[in-house]
Image (cartoon, rainbow, N blue to C red; front, side, top):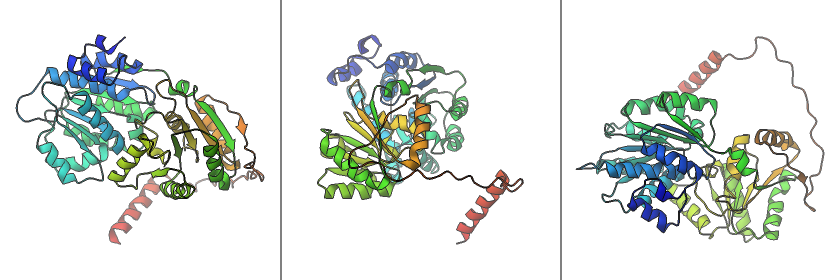
Length: 416
């Protein structure tokens, strides 16, 4: 079914034609008509499936059909887990809405930028507010923002927001917005706590679920290479030298490691950069833009790059450090082989991470052959498993004891 069959306006179809978007993805084809019919939606679909456009296009259509006179009021609130996704969604609203008869004002709230400037932009008139939840609450606490005209609440990558404490923030957000509104939630996975979020937001949502992400990533060429930790860097340089990859995303466990290894690879004449939450927003934007334009070929990143970012044609994903959870493995390697293109994902493991990768395989319904590369073979012996001491009954701290300790620590910090 082409976009022209989805009852979108000629102004929106004009932009889609310019971008050579002829046919919607599966999630777009199912969700767009439901949003236009004013249904609440809970949609589950894999990373890279086009979830954002499935709410951006119909919301633009509905706002255009129901124009408001006078100064713009906040009618749409979109909450996302990361700064990059916030800016990406805001840009998409602007781009897809550029031919509408009455231009819509889009404002983004992210950390790393002045709250005063962001609040001023809203007060000057705003139709669509796209924000990270943390920064939204920071601005909300100033009590200088009118949300009484809100018609649409959208959560993008809702499962990722859970890990950032969103459930605790949700009540504050719901108290600040009108109870009568259209609610749209999009997620790549649906952990049990998502049901708690959904039940607080809406009682009558229509559920849309697209092909499991594990089935999608099964099409990626996945490899596992056994190598000692100290040889991962030299092995990666060897793989890069022997391949024709023009765009490689390397996932690391922590922020400092991304900076250190990127600097080391630059000394070896690789076009490498680091991407992590410690970079200021301007540098994060510049780094992503350089990677998209192939001015940087190798991006060393933490998991903030695992979700939501729209980067085309990443040819290879390297799990230099394994992700903490099987779900994160799926999200990471889902950065490649998008839009029907081919891609490769390579994970480095050693004796200490063998068991963890077996768990990833089990949860992801995959089983991969272990490889070793000549000159970088895994040497030494696997550490022997030692049984810990048997638990002593009555010695384990209760939840109340742990909470008391946390409160005491917080009080100590206040006093210091």
